[in-house]
Length: 264
Image (cartoon, rainbow, N blue to C red; front, side, top):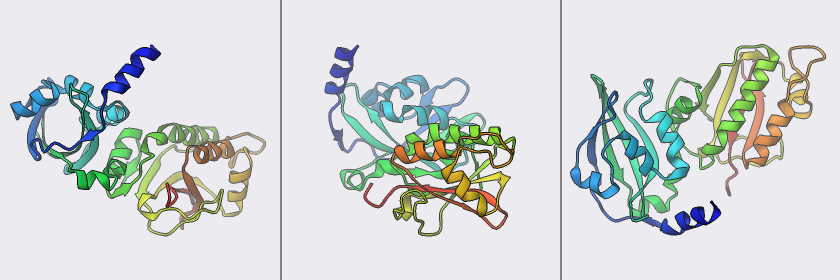
């Protein structure tokens, strides 16, 4: 198995920016998975349906594409940023724009990102709607952030929801872009504002006096004498290379502002 994985890694070359058909319009049939559009595009990536499309997606990006691209709740216009791998092993960086949904089909456009765009770190670009759809969060207003650690969110969000279940409260979480320059509650580092977003735990009402307990102890915030692993969750979040500001809003709901450091 290790030999096979090594060979696979060796066949994948550095990202290529061959100017192949930027702005290709493709239509996806949601029920059958059939894709219609540019035959040149299909032959370049050996794609003939949605299954082969997903298989052509770079492995680290595949889960997001699987969970979001055909999600019934997706709201056009929406962009997914990921990588496609050619049969030769060359990687192309793309922006996949969901333009519209109509009578069981999705109209999309695939835009190949040029070298100048990709050199700015486009792979860190993600829309909040992508995160909300992938992890079952509520979203009021979509916006774009620079967040290269998006794949690390899954385990953290699961732990947050586990904590809420331990507290016996509504597990709903609202996602939004942060609007202030925050400082990490765990290490004092300034967060990089373009990377930050907030998770509001609407079912958990606290006072600021509760926050010290949440950061420093694994005690329940709602049930006397019970345990709830808030401290452990925050420690895992920090160990994953993320930073967090713990606070409450004007409605006394618990708010986590999450992001990266300016040098990350």
